Image (cartoon, rainbow, N blue to C red; front, top):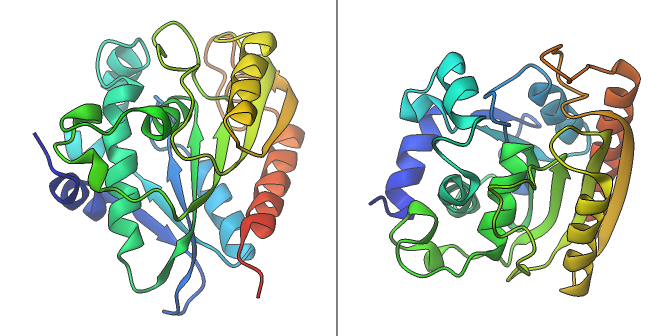
Length: 249
């Protein structure tokens, strides 16, 4: 079983870094893709983070595992492999690894996830960090105290997300995006989870976007439909959320 350091050594070579062209410590947002893998909408969010003065790190959970898009759509999106409570180890490893970078302010981190990535973040924030939890040998070695903001874009909170109502052990501010016509959850279910987060101490902002699951991803798969106007609004909100979450001196 991987330690956090070994898991990060596997993930780091595949990550994409976007940010201001300097080496001073800056706030950092860690971006976790959905079950379909790296898609063209994520670099747009990274650019929005850069415009807000943040460094953005797009984490590829599939490349190090040898998963191609066809396999991901068939096996991960169906819940056969790499469920969120297993991928949560990637979230912890990335937080731990990126916190150690000299060009990152480890006290000013945000984590952002889309669909499966949001599920994985929620598991990482709520699971008891006993040895072996979340697929890593030493999950308790990851310090979550620097995570001051969490962005959840239409996170998967369906049947396999067994722990969706488990209170988080670290409760930063949250912006939860729910798609009105999401085929994977109801608005009521999502709101129950948002209320639980608020009850455990998180400052929760909820935005119900009038679109489908993955409305910001250029796709027409099944019930999912791309909406350019909603995407622009999501990008605006993402940048504003990071601006508000940044340390103010």
